[in-house]
Image (cartoon, rainbow, N blue to C red):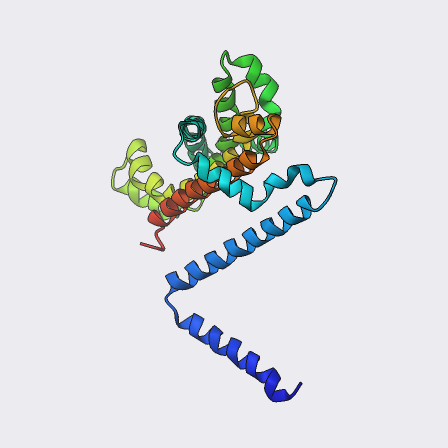
Length: 277
């Protein structure tokens, strides 16, 4: 192969790269996202082929993109899918609500008072490292309903990222702001409302973003408990009935909803980022 033949593809890709860099940022981001999802779908398709062509795994061939996406299309708009999504979102919302109600005040106290931070840091770090699912036996004993037990597990998943994210935000506040606020006659509540909460909003939403990710992961195995609704229940039911195409479709639904929840959290972080404003 001649030097000229080798240089032609190199020049083509070099020019392509230059043209790509000249595109608006949103166009570059869109193209890269499409490319990333195309690679993921291709890998899924290859995995489906390997499963279907292996005598030991061919029974699971419906995990492939074709059957899974067909099952997903059939489920879209059905009462079953709507009720399944609503049930899971309700549990996530309740759990996240209580995680915020508990986590933000604790985080503010830890960040503002050095003594409390020193006392609480070690036990809170200890509790944070315990898997939320490890609390499942206690949750089942402590709550009369399965929904209550699941919400408790989600609270245990969400509270720690919010606590430590909030505490970190308070610690980053310039001490001079507090001095100025005191000199202007601000009391404790005004300090909280006018100085602390606006300053830590970005950190709180960053903690909530982490909390949503952990909670969404915990939700599916938590819904293996005695409930008869939710995404985890739907996956468990599909597994028991050998409906692997439906099972894969529900996995796609979980991924889509999880991505949308994360996108909402990212929007809130950018909205309350002082660097972006």
